[in-house]
Amino acid sequence: MQERGFARTHVITEVFSALTGRLKVKMSPDAAQQTIEEMARHLDFVDLTANELLEGLTKAKSRNVTGGRVHDYAHALAAAKVGADVLLTTDRNDFDQLVPGLKIEQL
Image 1 (tube, one colour):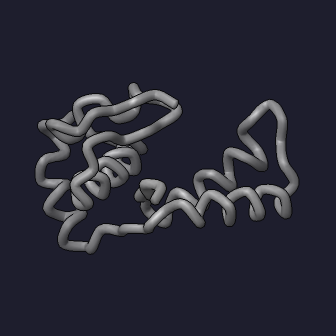
Image 2: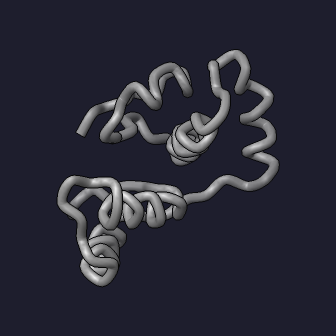
Image 3: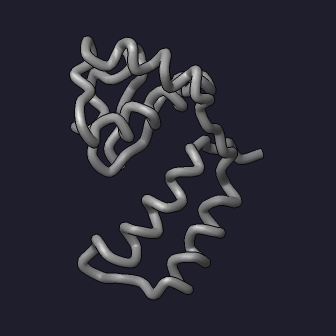
């Protein structure tokens, strides 16, 4: 059986944004939606509760989390929540040092 990945539901909108507007080769919204549906078949989705986010924010200063980096921090917190060993990303610099012990790998 193939190993499944985890992601926050917020990833769905991030991927849609990237596929339809931020890449050199843009997809149509319909093609992006179909691509995301296929991706989602291989993922289990996990989200953070308000209390989990608030608790995480108490450590934000010590982890150099400010501004928009809070969104990456929430992804890292969700990875830690499910006990992930590795977080896969297209920009490892966004995630360095956010959650101690979480390995960050560049896709």
